[in-house]
Image 1 (cartoon, helix red, strand yellow):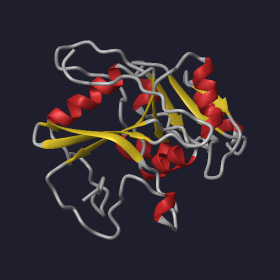
Image 2: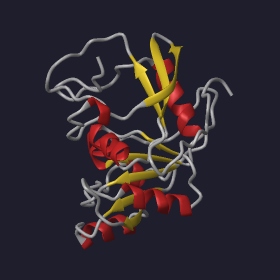
Image 3: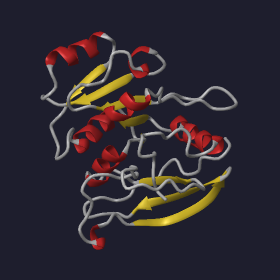
Length: 223
């Protein structure tokens, strides 16, 4: 039913191991993986590519964190498995950004957008670093901000055979949402395939004015 957690915040695990393997293969072919600081605080993820056959390329880890709330104890700060970048704003306390930098995290101070860090400015900065594919594994707030910033090309949706329900249980896209259906983000070229007991839906966000759709990292099956 589209929920990404229960009303109590539990999300492990809605989908099965085959779906999670697919996510790790997506990470393996991405230059960078992006989450919001809320995801790090709630789940303390590693954000690495762990393939069942071993190996995998760990992408650059990017945390969107307008107030520099990223804990110094988070795995992405202290595990040393991949570089970590914090995208923040001038609103962050200098002492917090200095502590993150001292811990080995690269701090990017970017302009502020409508809901936090200006994601278009962040995408330009990542592009200058040759990060041509960015996997957004955000929660509802980051997903909404990325769609609103018009930086999303392709969407992967894993659907599990569960009905969670609950008005307070979060969905995958937050924000205010459009008033009219005509303003909803349109998807095209949708395909579906099984992922163990789950279903993977893949689609492209329809091109909007001033931007074409970038189509890369097509299939994420074996190899």
